[in-house]
Length: 256
Length: 255
Image (cartoon, rainbow over all chains, first blue to last red):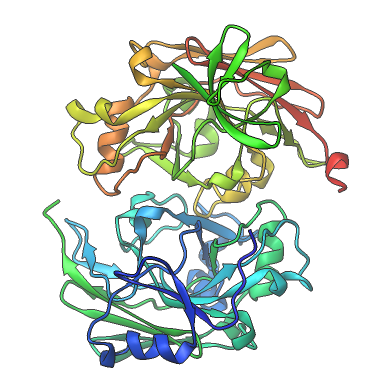
């Protein structure tokens, strides 16, 4: 399968299929003028997260990278998987797991793969991209990145995505995108993809050296330092210039 | 019933075991060697267990700084890493320690959330053999075990069959072993799992909704040794299957 896109692809809740439309149409439906229209995730491929790929996020660890248990700075991309039970769309409420009061908000750019990508060179890497979307890679806060329990990133609903996939051609430079996080309308974090250890093309090249990415898969570029936290009742809005605005409200979960 | 998914004569087929090899869903009977074996079902989320056999924990304990066991050490793999029976797994040139791991794969057959131990086995559709290779040269101490070690293309072998759960009277009493070039290098028994199948399903479903096609690779006992290009690696579990794999080198991939 080759997944091609000229405009933007989204899947409205209640619609039979994801459909392509101008970015402005999805923006209107996704905005407050859209009367709360919920979206399904725009793709169902495997979602790969990347850790410590923002220079400032890596800098937060500082000298710890040379001490136990890490013992050396990371060499290859640090990747993990957000399984299918975590992926939800725009405006779908996210349940805070029982026993947890706050969730860490991982605002990041999702690179959506358009054609099977194995051993892609950096120079050719952007050609395998269908488009880009907004991803909120939510975690149960955890201090150590040595061998954290998978549940910190894998509770149901901890990977909102969307509203739409915007075609690659409409995002001229994925390595210079402003990302803003607002909680209940107040901006709490600003970052820019210009701060990546591995910019998008390099990341794709290094990942596909050992692991094939398939059409519809999503590779996130990683979250910046000082990830904000939010609790039940709060609404999280992530805005990436030219890619979209993803909004989800956290709701209280069942008791642990 | 033992079920397979194979490519044959221009299409992908569901098939079942037959005295002469396999019987395709459309009635054709074909020899085992005449088909390309694929992972035997549509794979959803792949969950793997590290350190789920006490003897293997001991084997790796120096490296793992393991102190206490409070929850299962589980990690995820992607369906793209999977290959079927009689497949080829690539050993990159220059690595020092690439090893197989013979594991019982538990295939989920229905959606499951907050399932208690006593109801867990009702969620199991069946079982396969898995050979979950690792290349320890690539181990780094961030989000262990990292995907470069455990989620490489061709490095998770699954099959040959999906054996119906109803046909496995006790999945916690199955001898398993690995043979490299015909010589037994790993032996164990699923009764030695630290967290048994109901415990794993209860644990995983306590935070994530499992779905049909999700698969849990339940860990491996001790006896993992390095394998080299040209080796034939057979992982087998009594009553479940005998999964054959060949280790190949970079030249085949034009590297």
